[in-house]
Image (tube, rainbow, N blue to C red; front, side):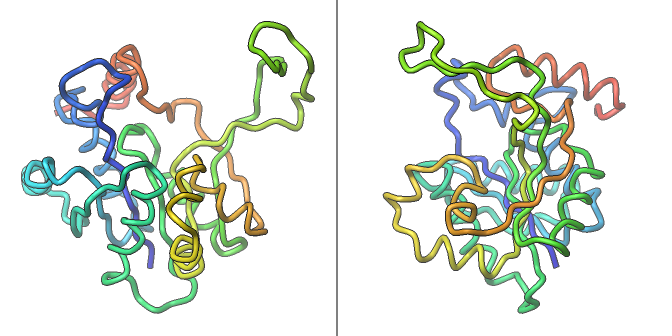
Length: 236
């Protein structure tokens, strides 16, 4: 059994708009609906839950009915940051998850509407080999380090560098245990979903990511995503 947690707690402060980016309309639908529809289409995903501000719960459940998102199980309260929202989602998933040791949890950003079903399938298949699976892309630009942001003081070996993406997949029970045993302060000092298990010594399996699987961060990203969604025929 695999359940996806869609993180939708962002307030859009950096985005500079009144409505958070995950609720902006592109290609005829809210961004989060495009993301949920991909999870709905994936046979390897058995259920979905969203972590969001309580102010948006009613609207998200309305979209569930409007767009026939039958896999959406519930909306849980988002935490103060990404890591605490993950913990909230993991705890909320417990009542829906079976006791199978191989059951998986997928952590997805609401603002990644272009992640394909094929990518989701690669992630869940990877859980047969490893407890933690993340999609990556090889770094294509020459990458430097700088201690002060003004002067170069190092050069990294590009062939060994990869950029991580979301969604990421984990074996549910041990991942939940990690988040239960880690303090809120420690969690809030982390960023990526794989950071905690990697620090705990887990083997993290990499699978090919997708160039089009962009994360909407700035207003221009909305326009790029809309063009790509229209190209794929994902419009209403």
